[in-house]
Image (cartoon, helix red, strand yellow):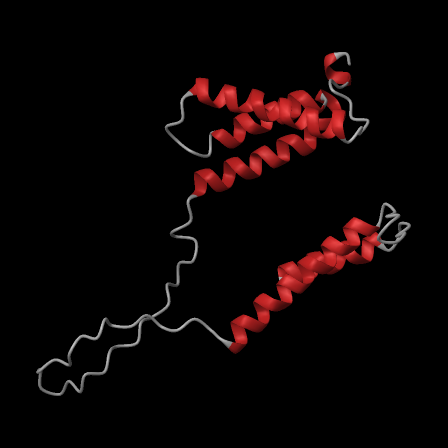
Length: 166
């Protein structure tokens, strides 16, 4: 349902922009199409969940036991009442921190330092990665983002923000 709600929200938001057509796309065309695709995927997930729910795990064809009073029926598994018990908190928090860091610093620091810092934070989500590998990855992703967004797409993004005198 989250996909449906987010997709519908983006599609409705895109209607505020000029749509254009397939050969001459306006600024609202891509968000509209992506929002509709996301909503459609959400509907497909909901339909699949109700039409063909996952089958319960089989017992591997184990023969019924010879215990008295045991008719071979398996016990019903109780659901885990601790849904967050198996959640790995470090990756979850570090990825969220990387996103928040980028959102809060992209205007002040600029695109290059914000991306570099976000990649460094995201790298902390996985333990055991060397700092050299992390820095090389951060530099590579920062350069790739600069090439794609600034050079190729010609987006007017401040490379270095006001906080750095840019």
